[in-house]
Each structure stands twice: as structure tokens, then as C-alpha cells.
Length: 266
Ligand SMILES: NC(=O)C1=CN([C@@H]2O[C@H](COP(=O)(O)OP(=O)(O)OC[C@H]3O[C@@H](n4cnc5c(N)ncnc54)[C@H](OP(=O)(O)O)[C@@H]3O)[C@@H](O)[C@H]2O)C=CC1
Ligand SMILES: O=C(O)C1=N[C@H](C(=O)O)C[C@H](O)C1
Image 1 (cartoon, rainbow, N blue to C red):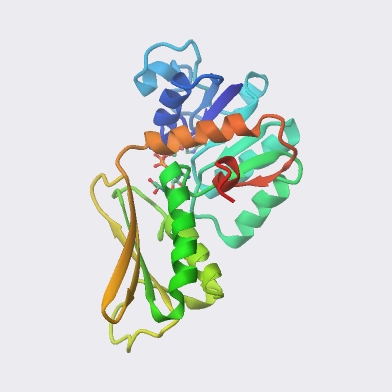
Image 2: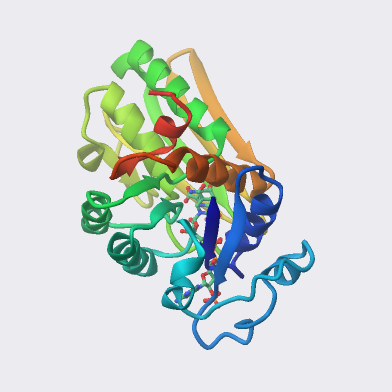
């Protein structure tokens, strides 16, 4: 399967190129960087540190239209939606790791997925996806007696908050408790907030240094607390997940899938 990576010079882009090199069944078909970037024309492998691949980086997806079967996109919402339209028009499969989308943007992606197969997940690591199932089960068993708080930490360059993973964790827990996250989420408390309400789900965000991605969901009641934590120590865990998603998409009908589908965790 020929894979294209857009945002190739980004933090995830470079690691994705490395992951393609180490994964059987996939090969780097194309790498796309920002139009006008000084990297256009440079070798994608040399840029990412794995050595020459013979794949020269392009400044636009249209320039490499015939060179790939699946696009892997870890960029930002506007660009991802543009790319989804391109994939829809050109019959390309799509793996999306981009976070920070609004509800309307997610719906736009879902619309594109009606015409082409798309895997979209805020976290492609196996560990986080297993943790989502642990959270579902813990929340359903503990019920409303336990306060739920979600704490996440990421590197100083991250642009969206809370992380897509934290929000997905919140959705899973809220769903298991019969709540709507939109109605019960409380983000970053400050000032005279009054006592915590029983049903709120709190989110706290830390941005510092080079943290790859830490997530903790805390369930606390009188006398005890449970913490379910996932810590990513390398972006390779996300990139390997993206490769699993790309391979899984082969021969799938159009539709919007997530990593729980890819990993048979549903
Ligand atoms: N689902 C998952 O498992 C994971 C998701 N993510 C998500 O992935 C996204 C990207 O994260 P990260 O790699 O850290 O971000 P980066 O900012 O490092 O990467 C994005 C890259 O896209 C480039 N870019 C900008 N415009 C274009 C364009 N028109 N065409 C091609 N490339 C372009 C940027 O270039 P420039 O810097 O020059 O603007 C940058 O190199 C985020 O939403 C993050 O939350 C991250 C890790 C795991
Ligand atoms: O921006 C990142 O780096 C990450 N983003 C994802 C998110 O927002 O959940 C996943 C991972 O934690 C790294």
C-alpha cells in the first residue's frame, strides 16, 4: 500500500515517515509539506532522519495525486478538511489524527467519509484505546457516587486544548454514566467557583516542555480514588497505530471508522 504523509516535516510527519519505513506492507508514496517551503524537492527520508528514500517532497497534494493509495493526515482542522475533499474527489483512503475540530468540522469530515473510507481518531496508540474500554467499564460500575476529573499534559507547542484524547475520554465516561458531555463538562476552574456539582466532569490542561502526551482520569469518592493513566513516551506509538489503520482500510467500504474499529475493541 502506497502511503502519503501530509505535514511531513511536522512532529508527527517525521515519525510517520520513519514508521512507514519499519512497517511491512506499506511504502512511502509521497510526502507533502507546506507550499513554498524550502523543503519542497528535498528527500523525505533524509528530512526525517532515516536516509534517502527517493521520495521528493511536494508542496501540494495535487502534485502527487497518482503516487499514493492512502493519505495520512496529522495536521490541523482546516487543512484536514481540504484534504478530505481531495480524497473524496480522487478515491483515496484517509487516516486522520488531527485534533481540535469543532462539531461542525467533524460533521464535514463524516460527510466526506460517505464517499471514501476514513479512520479518524484523536489517539492512535493501542494503550489509549484499551484505556477507553477500561474507562467505560469503570464509569459504568462506579456510577454517580464518584467525581470524575480528566487531567492531560502535552508539550509546549500543542495548539488545541483540552487534547482530543481527553475529550474522547470524557465522552466515553459521560456516555457510560448516561450524561451528555456538552452539558456536564467544566474546563479549567478559576476564582470562586462554588462547590463541585455531583455530575460535572472536570478537565485540567497542562502545557510544558516536551511532554509527548499524558492522560489521567480520576474517579474519586469519600474514602477512595481510582486513577486510570496513560503516558506516551514516544510519538512512534501513534505512528504505528496510524500504520495499522492504513493497512486495515484496504478493501473497506466508504465510511467513518475509528481506532476501536481498527483494533476490534468495539
Ligand atoms: N491522533 C493521534 O494519535 C495524534 C494526533 N496528533 C495531532 O496531530 C496534529 C499535528 O500535530 P504535530 O505533528 O505535533 O503538529 P506540527 O505542527 O508539528 O505538524 C503540522 C505540520 O503541517 C505543516 N503544514 C502546514 N500547512 C501545510 C500545508 N498546507 N501542507 C502541508 N503541510 C502543512 C506544518 O508546517 P509549518 O510548521 O511550517 O506550518 C507542520 O510541519 C495535531 O492536531 C495533534 O493534536 C498528534 C499526535 C498523535
Ligand atoms: O498534539 C499532540 O502531540 C497529541 N495530540 C493528541 C490529542 O490531542 O489527544 C494525541 C496525543 O496525546 C498527542
